[in-house]
Amino acid sequence: MDKAAVKRFYDLKSKQKEIEKELSELRGEILTYCEAEGLSQAEIGGYNVKIVQQERREYDDEKLKAALPDDELWRLVSRADPSKLAGLVKLNVLKEEQLFGTYALKKIALVHVERE
Image (cartoon, rainbow, N blue to C red; front, side):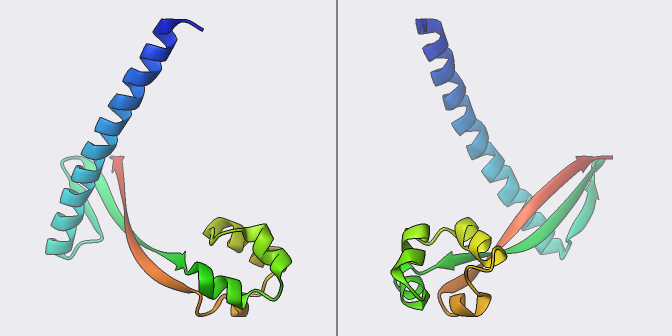
């Protein structure tokens, strides 16, 4: 491993942070515009913009632990990880009813932009 590889990695991670920050700001501008105009889809300057609303679960660790039937399941999950929990529901290890009341739904707006 040479110094150049480490330096390049550091430089790229720094650029990534800058790009993610700018993307977040632009996403906010697009969402603000679309919300003000009451749009969920728009054609802007040769680009198709679509806003997709999504709900994500934010689990409460204590409520979740209390809702699980045994400690073995809690060890499988170890913390409220939505993807692990969805997998356990899909495998019929847990029932959706057991999770009721252990999470809050958070609405997330996703921005999709495609070139025409």
